[in-house]
Amino acid sequence: MRKQMVLTAVGRDRPGIVEEFTKLILHYDGNIEASRMVRLGGDFAMLVFVSAPEDRVFELRRAVDDLHYTKFDVMTRLSEVGAEAEDPQMSRCTITVLGADHMGIINQVAQYLAEQGINLESMHTEVSAAPMSGTPLFTMSAEVVVPPRLGVDDLREAMEFIGDEMGVDTKVFEKVEGALTS
Image (cartoon, rainbow, N blue to C red; front, side):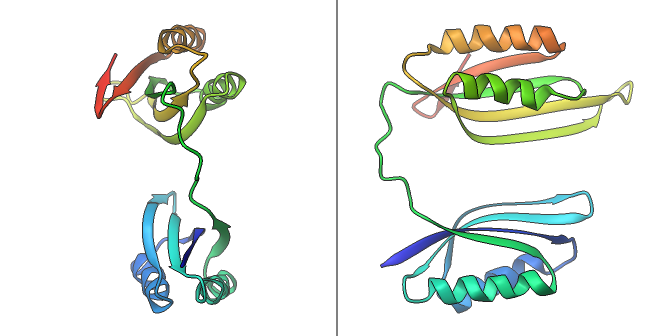
């Protein structure tokens, strides 16, 4: 039987970080089932979902923790794949936000989602220079699961209101069997 764990690691960016971690995971018969890795500023951050044989997972955790003291800020957490079935009445949506960057955009969106019981499954944000003016431009894309009591049109309307309040453009796309609809 295999056990799952979530591993997070952050350290000074340099070549070879991914190779070092994957070699260690393989040494303990581990398998990376999902991951997100990105350079942020001068650091490299990893978020990895790993499975390993039950009799090796604790050894793997200790070995990864040893890296914490030498090169990286590391945390591991044993996890279990969710056994609960998803309600077929729930809607999966993508929310996008685009506009001039300013403080509080993510918090405003996240606050609304939390208040409505909307589960945020993933989010990607970035600030880049606008093509002509060089003004900081904020972009966000979030994957969410909307409870049945809240319609997608209600979410769309609320996000438009939030966007108007913050001076950004928002869009909500419903995922339907692999396709997006607006």
